[in-house]
Image (cartoon, each protein chain N blue to C red):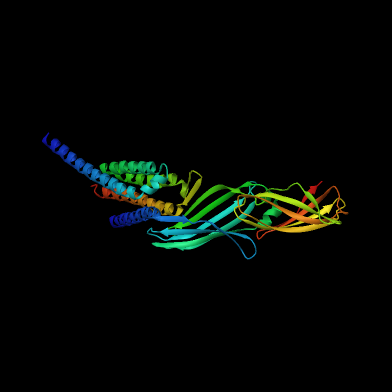
Length: 149
Length: 259
């Protein structure tokens, strides 16, 4: 009974630690977004929907990050990290419309070619995805090494 | 395997930070770029074409250079026929500097008249397509395009010859007074030399005269031209042939019947 209680306390302590880490990471990430959004304010005023697009991205990213942290120490952490990397790639492709962003303000058409930015971001996203796969393999490897036959 | 994973993590974080900071600073930098267009000026080229000059001032107070700045103007009529085109390229706009350039465009009114005489006698709408292309931070191509509709004012709007007056000059000749009436709707003052030839019904040249006119823009014009013709040769009907000669265009003959 006492051992069971001790085990529960340990798990609770571990979970609290993870939750704290996830909260700090989430707040830090939101803080970075908040600072950067001030610099992006001129473009937000010009482009309708830009702010919303960024906010949705930040929201989903933080949710995936928090879930990833909460599932730390399990294989699911790497699944969520991989999902996060794939989400970044896909969201960038869809929100940047393949790299050619166009908009019309009154009678003025503006076209920005962001393909280079998108390509670099996609490569970094793929690198993040590869990292998560490696981490998952490494995690399974380490688990396998600890099994006593 | 931990070390390679850590290295990938470090590299990814570094490049993400670099990319985000670079992109955000590039966007932020754009707000400190100011474009100013001066008063358009009009002149004449050595080959008698109309020259439009638009001074452009680009004050780049941003953090990065702007590359390949290109301003293109295309003017076409309502059918899409290209009347004039001009482009100005500034290869590099350096950061923290003011760059001044002049966007020039030439219009050959003689070419326009060959396409349609309406440009001389009727006001119309012209389509102007302005395109500005540039490379922000020298790597992000951006293009801004707008279509405008501008008014073309005819230099000889409503051109007509008024009621002809006949006055005896001597026994053999008489003086014909022909009123010339029009409105200069063009955006330039018209300094014109009009030659007028008078023919009778048998296509015989009765007489000719010429007059210099000065019609300021957006003002009506009415003056008289006098021709001495032989009394014997004159017929009840006939026609006038008019030839126009200005610094911007030469045109003629314009035929007006009389009688």
